[in-house]
Amino acid sequence: MSVYEQLKNAAQPDWDAYIQHAFVRGLGDGTLAPECFAHYLQQDYLFLLQFSRAWGLAVYKSRTLEQMRYAQQGINAMLDTEIGLHVQYCADWGISEAELARLPEAAATVAYTRYVLDSGLAGDLADLHAALTPCIVGYAEVARWLMDQPFTRREGNPYRAWIEMYASGEYQAVAAAEIRLLDALCADLPARRLDELAQTFHTATRMEVAFWQMGLDLSA
Image (cartoon, rainbow, N blue to C red; front, side, top):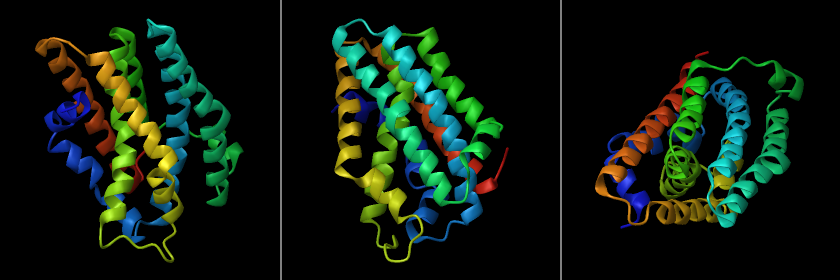
């Protein structure tokens, strides 16, 4: 069993609450209120900005050139591609880049992103990735889960593009690479250390649940 699977199992039942959240189900059957999705998109833009900082921290925390290059790929993907695509996607939903720049961070956004950064600052690269993995790999699992559900609607679903983006082979490969890195970072670690990483992973998972709920509640 991979380290990722061990950490995921230790995070139950919160992991299932994350993957199968009501927000996710609303994406699948297309019933999620558009204003809830728009609120999520706005906060996810702010999340991506902080995620970019986390990848910068990953470079600093790296001990090998290979690890540095992996983190650099994360930074490049965020700053050169992902954020730009997200801005365009927000524009498709009627949210301008100027509006995104003026947004205040919701409490759930602050709590989650600063927790990730704090985990990396206080610990090592394994701690940082234990906090990052629920997002990176979790979204791949969310998309796969939705694709397998009989209630998921494709035709006429306004969220189809979102689901297919994370279900794509390209994003699934990103998730698989993150699992491999986490396994490499945690190889031969004592049980006590794995328990610490499991706690970090579990907390980040609960933060993901809160992030979905923020979207549903339109909370600030």
